[in-house]
View 1: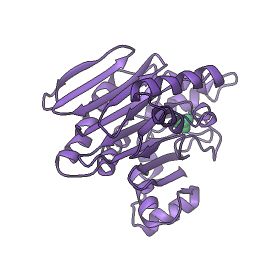
View 2: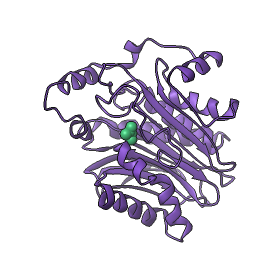
View 3: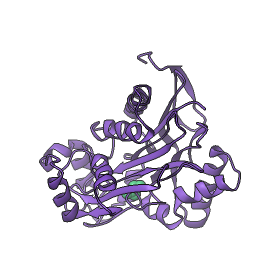
Amino acid sequence: MLPVVVVHGGAGVIPEERREGVRLAARAGYAVLQGGGGSMDAVVEAVTQMEDNPFFNAGRGSVLNVAGDVEMDAIVMDGKTLASGAVSCVRNIANPTRLARLVMEKTSHLCLTAGGASLFARSMRIPEVPQESLITEYARMCWKENLAPGANPVESQLGKFGTVGAVAVDGGGNVACATSTGGILNKMEGRVGDVSCIGSGGYADNAIGAVSPTGHGEAIMKVCLSRLILFHMEQGQSAEAASDLGLAYMASRVAGLGGVVTVDPQGRWAARFNTKHMAWAAAQGGTLHHGLEAGEHFTQRIGDPR
Ligand code: GLY
């Protein structure tokens, strides 16, 4: 069994800049495994990197809601114990995934939302950041464009943004997932998407594997995409075949588009999508795999800069 970290940086029509961002994130997560960290440490590190990168729709770079504010969702799940933690509609923090991990580790709850999540963040001494530090000029421009009568923010977003996520297996065969997002462009205030909902925005179970999705949250929630894919793996499908079955069901049943990264406890992995692009990268055994367009699969040594 070879430990692995697999990340995605959003599905849709994805800009080239994300290629570099997902490679950096996969390398960072893999370095944690090589340093003796567990799969949970690795996925949180990988996703934190993408939350700090303004090219992704998570943390800094998040899309804005209809009022022009940033409200973020995140989840983590530990396949060893089925422990999970999530936050929804959280504001003024740089790394919602770290807060989700604290919900898992320090409370008896699975999800904290909005003001309650902020109170908890303060009690954990997570620094508050000004909202302006999370907003990029690009996000503000897209928000303004989509305030116009007749605008279609969902359509517009598929061309530009994407949730981020990671799955990993460590040397002990423990699997974990983490997913983080600013949600969908010009969403209603208080909208909660798939990401903070266990089984939709991620799932991890050492007996089966782990999944982190990206795509239109309402569609992902209707089919509980992450747990659906793991159900297919429980029935004997490979990570790749189960991912394709889950995505095909979402497309045929609710016309939903998206992508996933999936691992099994043996370190077999998949990065699959039914959109034009999904930025993805996987680090395993000294090799970095990556791609963006359908059918694309490049490899390089992990240490090579490009
Ligand atoms: N999949 C991210 C969202 O819809 O919020």
